Image 1 (cartoon, one colour):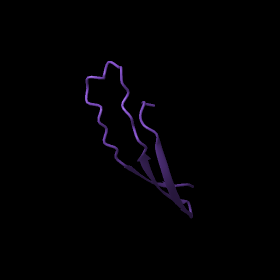
Image 2 (cartoon, one colour):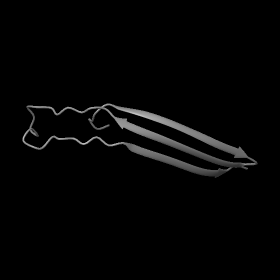
Image 3 (cartoon, one colour):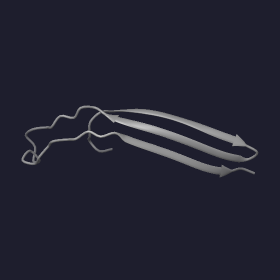
Image 4 (tube, helix red, strand yellow):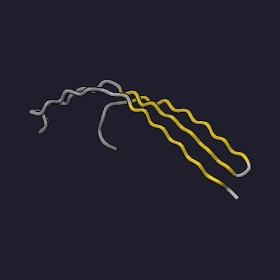
Length: 66
């Protein structure tokens, strides 16, 4: 874990299982919260501006069971 801002994660998934075939799909959206710079550190002279972005994560898996 790295120090960072708070974030909200929203996820959903669906799976299909039939005749030994397994297919799973997952999606996650990460929404960052506000991040405030910390003063009085070694890094204080550096630019601490932070542009928040969203992260979209997708997972897809295939499998077969005997």
